[in-house]
Length: 386
Ligand code: ADP
Image 1: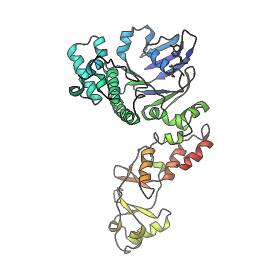
Image 2: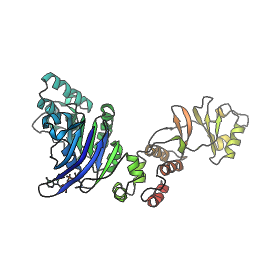
Image 3: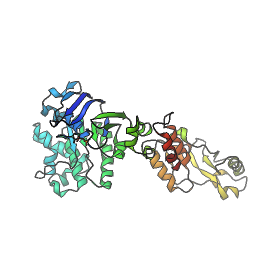
Image 4: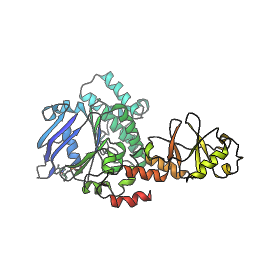
């Protein structure tokens, strides 16, 4: 969709913001550009829509060299969302969202319809908000208007420069969640600059880690950047707590689960006791004939039950289960809330195994590459602490 070929920018004062950047962005892909301040992220972004003219190289958008396309045409294909929104203060919210369609000469009815649709999309219905002025909105709401404006002309590509950088952490969390929802519907091709590695991990399909001069140190999915940093620069940038960050992108998988004894509803309590006694866990999971999760047995309730009682009569239900594919971070937080330190994992109703803190640890270890990555020795004690 987008290809940057040897792209470079030398400012008139001689600063080489971006030396020679080669990078590809697939259709519908969201790539987060991260890296220390001044490494050329914003310059790169602004070269794509030619707010900044490159001094070398090419940008190819869907096969077209965009250095040869008129900027008006280009802006129709590329939406732009920036920090502190850049809303026009003297224009209503509706007029702000309609900026690009108007510039493009859309017919009035169509512009109005599209504006209302975009306001709905970002959760600020036109009936209530279209006639307000930006200063009558909270920071988070203004930021949403920025997103609505960026999407108004239905561009193929969206460029976002720290779009949620200026709001408080709670509003930011909500904006990120909403933007994920919007992106999962629209599948825009997005380049997203952020200084917040957690935001990148949460939103991006791939993370591009830059060092000074717009040097691309690694371009990979978040789990790989965190689990297998390409070099020391990337490892340092994503932080020594990247093991913990990986919890946010690593799903619960079947191979990591613990398998305690399993008994059936119709089994006798005596048999369940024998099964529990043979295993280290101290409990057994109860399933029905279809393999669906029905509860667990163990502890005094099982010890004191008559031997010929049915498991069904002594089984206890689970308050919580974890769905296969849940991110480890969410699963771990459920585990922490749950006294026993283990939770059953299901796909629908079907029982698959048990998640324990050790299983979480095993999952994180499994995803560290064979050679242990850049400094796996530093990371191990951290993972153990999980
Ligand atoms: P980032 O977005 O990663 O923080 P920028 O792309 O804004 O980085 O800046 C990259 C480098 O280019 C920095 O050294 C910055 O000081 C420099 N720079 C940015 N804009 C200009 C400009 N208009 N003139 C000269 N140097 C600039």
